[in-house]
Every structure is written in C-alpha cells, then in structure tokens.
Image (tube, rainbow, N blue to C red):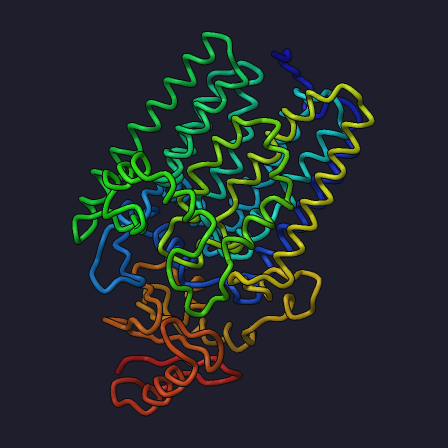
Length: 488
C-alpha cells in the first residue's frame, strides 16, 4: 500500500490546476447557464429549493409543490443532505444546490487526482484521470438537469478511496456517512463498494473495517427502504420501487434475482416494457456509450465491475424508460468508478510511456462518449441544456427584464403557483406550487410559451386563455411572454 503523501499536488501543479480551472468553467457553462436561461425546472430543482426553505425553518417538506396529497419528501427520496445544505439557502436562494453540486464535483475531481497520484506517482497521469472523471458523460448529463444528491455522493466516493489508500479512518467514515445520507439507494451502492474494495485492500484491519461498513450500509438500506420510507408514504409502500420485472417489493425482487438470474441478465440488454415516445434500443445505446466511455478498462479491475452492479440493476430494470438511457443524472456514479478503477489499473502498468498512452486513449474515448450524448442519441436528452458549443444553449427562454418586473410584484411571503421553468426562482418560500397545481395560491406566474408541465402545448394554451378570462383572477402583468395573475 502506498505511503501517505502530504503534498496536495505532488510536483508540478500546472497540469492539475489548469485542468481543474477548465472543469470549473465547463461545469458552470452547463449548470449556471441553464439556470440563468431558465432551463431548470420545478422537478427537481424547484422542489428541492422549496425543501431547503422548509428545512432552513426547521420543518419538514410535504411535497405539496407537485403532489395532490401532502407527503413527507423523505418518503420519496430519503435525502438527508438537503437539511445539511439548507443554511446556505439563506444566502444563495435558488442557486444554492447548483453551487454546492458544482463545488463538490470539483472537490471530487481533486480526490481523483489525489488517489491517482498515490497509485501512479505521476502528475500527468493523475491529471488525465481527473479529466476522465470530470468529462464523463454521466457528469455532464447530470449537470444538464438541475441538482441531484446522488451526484454529490458520486463526487465524494474518490475521497473515500483516498481515505483507504492513506489509511485515514476518519476520512473514510466521514465520506461513507455523507454518501449514505445522500439518498436511500446510495446505501445499497456502498454495500457493493465496500465489499468490492476488499479485492484491493487485503490487510486484515482494512478488510474488517470495509466489511463492517458494508453491514452498516446494508442495514441502513433496509431500515430506510423497507421501514421508514413506506411509513412516510401515504400508501404505506416504497414509492421508489419501480421494478415490476422483479416483483412487487424488495423481498420479491431478491427472490427473483436469486431464482431467475437469466431473466435479470436478459432484461439488462432488452426493452422489457413498451417505449412510447422513445425509439427502441435505448439500453443497447447505453451499453455502447458506456463501453465507449472507457468502461472496458474495468475488466482489468473486476472489483469495480462488482461496484457497478447495483447502479446497472436499478437503471436498466427500472419501469421508467427515461432511466435506461444516457441522459440526466442516472449515470453519474459510473464516473468515479471508471476513474478510480482506471487509476488502479494504470498503476499495474510498469512502462511509464505505455501507461500515459493508455490514459490518453481512455480520455479521448471518454470525451468522444460525452460528445456523442450531446449529439444524436435515441434516449431523451435535453440538447439545448447540454450543447455548450451552440448558440441556443446561451439564449434565455424567458425575457429576463419582464420576469424581473413580474417578480417584483409578488410579495416575498405570498403563495405562488409557477410554470415549471420559473418555479425554482420562486420556490424559496413556504408555499410554491408547480402549475397546474394552484390550490390556495394567491399568484400565478406563467409563461406564454415553453414546456408546460403535464400539458400538451395546445392544452396549455387553452388553459392560459381560460385563466386570462376567469372571474377568479385579475391580470397583474402580461408582457414579453411573462404572465402574472392574482387571485381576487
């Protein structure tokens, strides 16, 4: 095992610092530009921002932003990072979670560098691996769609491995705990991560600690998923269990996996449900881009294939077709596995020049896969959110001056129902609903155009016409596509 290295960059810092600066700009050009141009949404950034408000005021969130029946948000995703982050929302408002996600991803990139230095001993190799992580399609795709705590968990994983490599138990436990807090499925992931890491850290004390962590993670997963979350859900069931191919609940899923593995393997590669609105072959496309991104290198480190198993299962066996593809945040966990596994594999290559050539090739393929997801894919991808190299990405879908004037007419404590693109901007308040939910709202903040939530464009147009002529509302503002109505 490598000795602990106390130098942060271990040599010439120009390579990693320039790479980190590039990643900081690249991430900002996706996440911050989308929010600035109103291409973030009520689900999920608006909902989570509303939750920040509640947590910052020492109360639970009831998911009323989008649910017809109030229900504790923890029953949907058991995310304990949001309460931890909520104090920052007093300062940063609707930008809070995007800023945290941006910063933690950069922190994760530093963790990849640190771990890679310990495994390869070369600044250039470690910088290449940092870019492999940072430019992975799972990271860029996640940034293109709001904020998600599994992305934060994925970015913390490199520091868990730094703690293993440097024999720092406190760092291991800290990152392990934060990953468990991210959401319920992250604890299942850590069962596989901890047991898979035993392949590479074989001294008795470390193995014992890893096995203990796997037991804790497994126990936490069952406690949260089988007990607490169903108790918080109105129907008394785990709302996130959407795996009909495996059965009706976690117990039946485990039974199916154990008794019919052929079904599970077949479902990993074939569309097991109809795909209305999508082209067939979404899973095959995912496997192609997944392997193109460099996943083939994991065959050199089988323990990391084991770590990827729960992510692959929850992704490809899901009843929601949009989860199968290369889009959004459903691939973020693959990025650290690829980079960390790549560092361990690279460390076994003794010829320095050959190792660098292999890592350059890995990075080139990783970038090629990321560009491919921005271009033409069968899966649902918000292309205008991701294509930083095209002008539409930098163009706002809302007239900012008109919106600013409309927002100025809404009292800070007023209840608001807002178009999904505008909801994140008004969500930091006690009552902020995603239109068409309007129950009890004093103001409606809408767009004349855009992507309506739960409506076709024609249905949305008819709804707007009806509201404009309704006796229940008065028109406060209607300019440049921004509409503000107040309940009489």
